[in-house]
Length: 576
Picture 1 (spheres, rainbow, N blue to C red):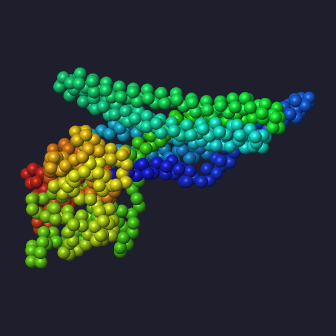
Picture 2 (cartoon, rainbow, N blue to C red; picture 1 turned 60 degrees about the vertical axis):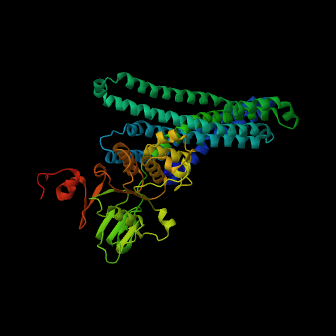
Picture 3 (spheres, rainbow, N blue to C red; picture 1 turned 120 degrees about the vertical axis):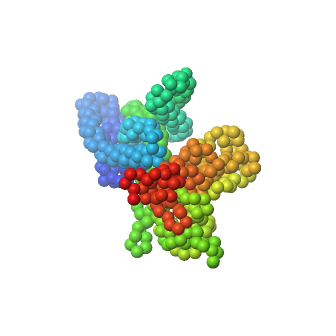
């Protein structure tokens, strides 16, 4: 399972900044120039009052106001320079996400042919553009807030430092309130996004099967199902709307309360040396600097910021990570980080026994899905044990990620996970069983593993993940499903399924194998049904004296045993 999205969300958000440090520096410099009116406004208004109009010198007052007009013009000119720098940050992020979504869609099409990825279409046409616009918007919002509020507070500090005693406490309180509200708003926005995806998937399935719906007389059932999806989306949208309205409290505390406190303490402030111009300048800083900046921040973080976090997380969860660069191996060769290599491997159960595996050369590439087929007793499970490190070859070598298999069982368990025919489940809670190989997995990780394997019904029947379970109270298929979800959740780079789905029906078996095929790392399946071969990247056919690997189409041409196993009794045209 790929848990990287949870961890790398911050990395993805900061990647454009780290990738273009010069652009960031130029953006910051122009932002500082843009904030010049905010820094100068209060001081110039105070000067116009105290040194100009209040002192009976209107010409001086007008000069101060003229300087303010110049500052506004300079700030507007700087704003114009900001947008090209912003585009230089945002567009590469959009390109990376498009590449990632397309790669994920192609991978899904390869591992689950015939199943249109309607959610993938939504990610490409809607979610990527949401991230692009939201990232640009939130960058502008945060940048403007930092420089505008910083300029206003710095201006107050130079103008009348005592005013900060009145202004800062409500501003800090508003920041705390906003932080508390963002979590619930993010959860609500995520639920809305998932509801949108579910509705798109349901609608896509109905549209693609209208003829079957009509033929089966299932119009009412289909309509009820779509109505349920629409209602869930509407409920999620209403929750987001309610939380959006609650954000006005933050603006009231941070934007209007400082102004009320400043006016109510005006006599006390003037008694401590604050001039009339200083008061009016401070009011200017609040109304023209703090209030607009805070309002923009509240709207931006509560709107674009939440959409950005939720949508980007969803894209990262739903698409495979970029492949890591291969590490150099011996003799100048390169190995992928999760590849498996068998070199002249042989194995026999005893010194005088006939070898079960003889001089086998095999490579499982990084991220590859290999299925092993052959007659019963031919050595398929022996091969699984050799690759998993449970058996040591009598000749040759097995390498994982370009290195020999670790001798330490604990170290080996971090790199591979094996599920045999009879799955192991221990007495304890269901959650403890699921997280046995991934103790640091969060609730979201476990939920995704449960959904990927199709364990939701069993979880509900048992009473939730916290329910106590006893192995003898579960069927063999239920124990296999729990073990599959446990393996899916583990951090292991190699998964070996040794007829691990033999107690499942064909549909559940297909779902589990397709889930592992989408998971990061390599997958080896000792097939229980020949349908597993149709889902693989390559198939290894073992016949006791030799082993041949290839795609399904290649083996139909080159292997009589494979044609026999798959029921293709006649050779295809052109076969030799």
